[in-house]
Amino acid sequence: MSAFRLSLWLVAFIFAGVAIAQEEGGKDASSNDLKTEAEVQFANGSTVRMAILQDKLDVQTRYGTLSVPLVEIQRIEFGVHLSSETAKQVDGALAKLASVQFAEREEGARELASLGPHAYCALLKALKSTDQEVVRRSEKILAEIRSRFPEKELRSREEDIITTAGFTIVGKIVSPALKGRSEYFGSVQLQLPQMRQLRHLHAPGEIQLAVDASQFGSQHGQWMDTGMAVESSTNLLIVATGTIDIYPQSAGQYVSSPKGYGNVVLAAGAKVAPTPVNMRNFSGALFGRVGDGGDAFYIGDRFEGSAGRDGKLYLHIVPSPWNNASAGSYQVKITPRN
Image 1 (spheres, rainbow, N blue to C red):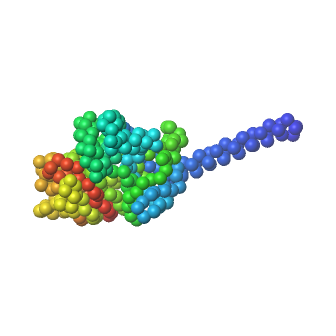
Image 2: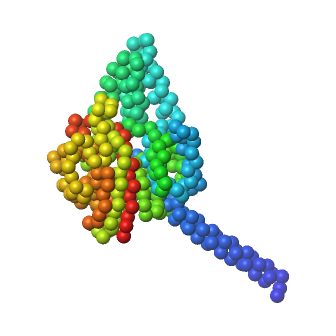
C-alpha cells in the first residue's frame, strides 16, 4: 500500500470515528434530555417543551437554603421574580411614598403605577405599613393597576412552590435563571421573571402539589392543570389537607378546609356543572375536573373513585361569595390506581 493511500485510509478512519462518537454523544444527550424534559409556561402564556440542564436548584426557605436535585422535582409554580433593575425601581418608588416631601410622594406614586404588575406584590405588602399615608396611596395605586391589567397578570405571591415526590417546598429559587435546551431554539437561559410554571414530563405516577387559592380560588373558572393525564378507567385517590382564608381582609375569621367553608354538604365525587351559580354555595371547597369540558366533581379532603373520562386532571377552589381574592393553599396528593 502506498504512503498516499495509507494516509487517505487513516483520514477516513479518523473521520468515521468522530462521526460515531458524535452519534453516540447525540444519543446520550437525547437520553439525558428525556430524563429532564419539562413543559415550561411563560408569562405571555406560551408553553415550550425543553430539557432543563440543572443538576439541582438552590431554594432559600425560612429554615435555610435547600439544594433540591432536579430529578426529584415534579412541578414548580413560580412566584414573583423581578430583574435587579426592576427591583431597584420598585424599591426606590416605594421609598418615595414615605417621603416628607409631597412632590416626592407624588412622583413615587406615578412610578409605581407605571410599573404596573411588577409593583403589584410590593404594594400589597405596603398595605401593612404603619405609615397611613403609604397605606392610603398604595390602595389607590393598586386600584388603578387592577383597572388597567387583567387579573392573571397580577400575582400576589413572592415565593416559589416546588413540588417533589416527597414533599412541597415553599421558598425562593436563588438562581436568576435556569439552563435549558430546546429542540428548536438550542441552549437557552430561562429568566425566572419570565417564567410562570415548570412541569416535569416524566414524574412518577403519584404527584403532590400545592393549590394556591390566590391563583386557583379567587375567581370562577380558575382551574389548575395538574399535568396528570388519566383515562376513564383510571381510579384516583386524591387526599387534600391544609386551610385557606376566603376573606383575608379579616384574617382568621373565614378559614376553610378543603371540605369548604360552612355547611357544604356533598358526597365525594358529586358532580356539579362548573358555573358560578351552581358553585356559589361551596366557597373554599376543592373540586376536580377531567378534560376541558368535564363536569366539576367534589373532592373535599378525600376522593376515591374512577376518573370517568379521558383527559387531563384539573383542580379548583371555589372562590368566596364576596368577590375578593382568597389566600393560602391546599396540599394535595394524587395517586392513580389503574
